[in-house]
Image (cartoon, rainbow, N blue to C red; front, side, top):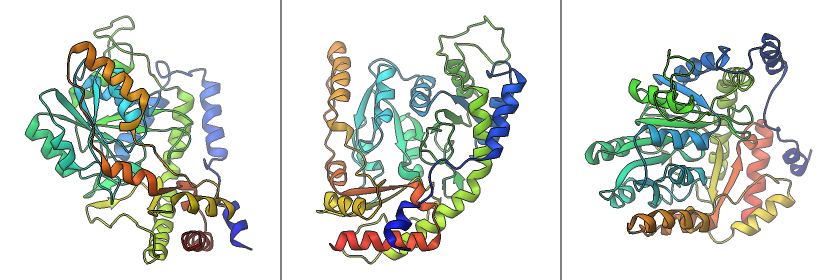
Length: 386
């Protein structure tokens, strides 16, 4: 079998089977399709909180609104500043705008693509209320440094763990290492129900606030029309939670496979001229392995064309930096202009640089056989050398 055929036969995503079908039928036949009448969402919340070593997990519609809810629960509002990395999905920044706050971009570390704690500290002003730290591709950020920043400056630390299910930093699962953490269950994610999200925290008071924001201002145990706060309606359905419970049970086996293949790819690519991989970090005790990222300075587009020709059609050039996104800048300036505040200008040369030379391999490429992974490494090596 040629390498091209092996690449085209990489596993599809999501992985699913009779277990998901059975779980969906159970909800269907129960007649309890919403979380206000059923208990499947509640059960998954308990299971996911335990899996991520968090005191509380509150599910909601998606990972984008999970960040907005986390910010609101932390008291972030109109005119406040929220420090975010520019090399991330737009939701990390747009969530701040949803609550009337201004996303302030601090640069990433070029070796890891993750928010640089020193750059984040340099971006702090008297208006800063929170830092959203992204565990990009499933690689945990330096949470010790960010928690120190939070304590030193009185800031809320929010982990954007949308891509980091099962990841751990110094033996602690991500999501509740900071004050709040957010997850996504969107179609591409390593645990998925097509859409969905969760907010995690160890703080009982914050958990109650998040619950209220997701449930139209209700309080746990309160009456149906007892709205103690102004909240959204962002509830997950019982159908989604039924799928997520099965996906959660699948995750450890698939995570082990992704890790094994990622390590093999790393070994096979580590000495290839022109390929730059993120360095090992002993603090990362479990990598979420949502993406396998590599940098190929000076030849990214040519390498992507070679990969596509060789059957690696799902490889991607990744993010365009958000500090250059016209819509985000326009919305941010509308807020600062209205309030008479200065607009914080971003200087993010590392994000500019990595956005021109980074290649992503999405997680299905880590779910193949050992021969497929070896063939993938060969294809990458040839693409870089050509």
